[in-house]
Image 1 (cartoon, rainbow, N blue to C red):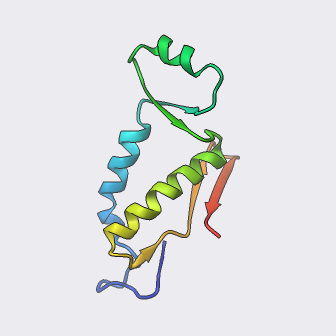
Image 2: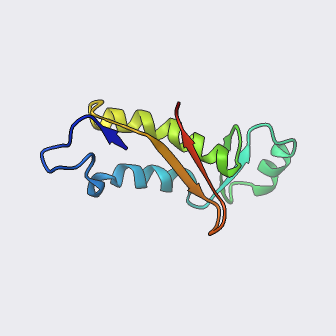
Length: 106
């Protein structure tokens, strides 16, 4: 996150106020199967799951694709939350301790 000026507490953004973002992450990713929207097995998978899991379809469920997906959703939510005072700089997704991907809007 970045801002031209710090808030009244000297923060770019008070991380204690990120509950709205944690709730969005849980709603969209907790107990959720993430699939590419063009997965050739999508219909079969949806039929097989039968409501046992949430399914979210995104353009690319790679680490890179997830970073971009979250960035593009969060940048608008953060702008609304802060009345456009704070902008999102990047999002990093950790696949494991060795693999990460960072999306930065250019």
